[in-house]
Figure 1 (cartoon, one colour):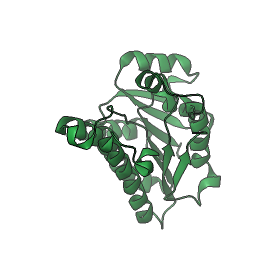
Figure 2 (tube, rainbow, N blue to C red; figure 1 turned 90 degrees about the vertical axis):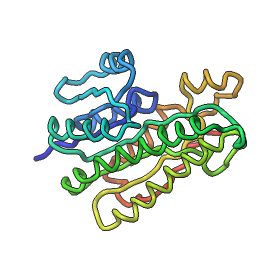
Figure 3 (cartoon, one colour; figure 1 turned 180 degrees about the horizontal axis):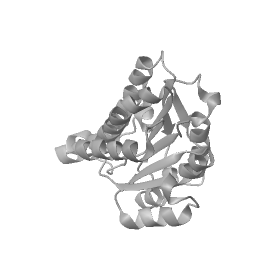
Figure 4 (cartoon, rainbow, N blue to C red; figure 1 turned 30 degrees about the vertical axis):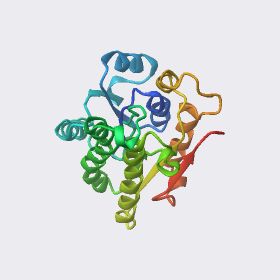
Length: 235
């Protein structure tokens, strides 16, 4: 019987680190991408898992060739892919549209949209081969609320939701589902640092978001496809 395999891009971030233990408890083999070696070592130290069940792979997920190479290595090592959790993303700071330069705009498209597109596209044929799977991406409440001063971020996250929901319609006759999680500001060290004067007490925590993701990985979620699931906390 083929074992289940999950790929978590950006898995050394707050949500990834909270999600991976759930995957391990579900007996998945897990491949995790990272950029900063110290974060990868810290994650490895935190996890109580055999080395043959965990792959840590340095990968710039905004680089299509790097992503395709990473997915190829996962399949060769673990035999397939059932789950892709595309968690890479970021916020490049606020600017009014007229002040948004091309570099900043491209960075938001690369980090939020292209990283998601590249990972899902590369993994999808292997999920079809496995005949079941779960695809999870991360949007943002900002894509609906469209707050002023961050048009590039808002647009990139709106595109992620559209991408995933389009894919869900393509997968409607399969055992693969595609959903997008829509958080408000996630309570991580990075967001607290970026927004030092914000009231973070009601922001959703990575551990809380991971419980929602865990449900989406379960058999009970098979009727949920193409959903944009709000995880707003109490903001």
